[in-house]
Length: 401
Ligand SMILES: *Cc1c(COP(=O)(O)O)cnc(C)c1O
Image (cartoon, rainbow, N blue to C red; front, side):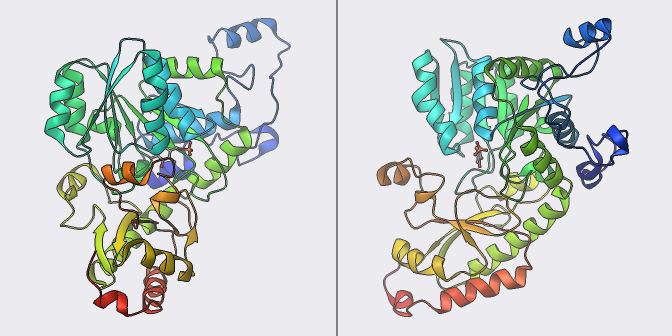
């Protein structure tokens, strides 16, 4: 399957040809256990000498199809699925980290990941060093001091900073550290961290992979040796994905490449429009030539993704008037849906932080995060335009803040 292009893999990978009753689509297998009349066969499957399923916490045919599809899209040897993106992240970290270990990471990781680094791992005696997110020299210096795991995310949430994955993977490997990348924002269509030298790529499948905001899941991909260890930790602690969720994610992934293509185009067009708008003071989108990470993004991504963020004149007050006027945007958390989603980080991704903490992370209170859907881009731009036009004109003449 690995020789096919991503769009072909998205629709075909993991889909078995022969299913019960001649079904052409992978069914939701609800059965918790899998029975055998042949005692030798049962033994061989139970001991991993032969492929098959024993118990639902370990493996399940629907879950496996979802894992196989992602594995192919990331050109990985193996993949294993989880109940959520955070389960994928925490299981990966807890599989490999031991008391006395050191992690080098960035300040802008996903909120939940940041909580694991600030609240939970330090209790286990793991030392975490947070670097300025796009300061590659600082990261290299910290990594060179010696560490066990380098944890990256690119593009980052919500200001779309870009980390040079190849460069950081090289630095990590010089000190024999494991290099883990959260690729959620890019999806496997826009970026393949394993090809850039990372050891493990993980995704919140809840976002782009599923694409319809109706199923939660997470997935980890990498070498068989590493993924087997993560799988073993997961089969014991039980953060297994539900087969119904795996089915919905598998179904969503069949159109992944088509959706991402449209979302890339929409985000670029919306970013370009916002750039010209007198209502907008800053636009953060790696596809814009003046974005600080544009050159790195061009090098390591196939396209720039469906996520962007922006600031408006008048900050929070303007934002509070603007957002309810939009007809083509769900005001909600999450991202990567076929419908456009809009929201301020202060009530979504960074709701756990204080305003001071957000300021320290470079997240203005009035920042607006925009997850482009698959709508017609002209409609999205017209919708933003009508929402801006409805605002009091005095905002434009007031002092820029
Ligand atoms: C949403 C998200 C997660 C967490 O995923 P869940 O499925 O919500 O647990 C992790 N990383 C990034 C970048 C995310 O956007």
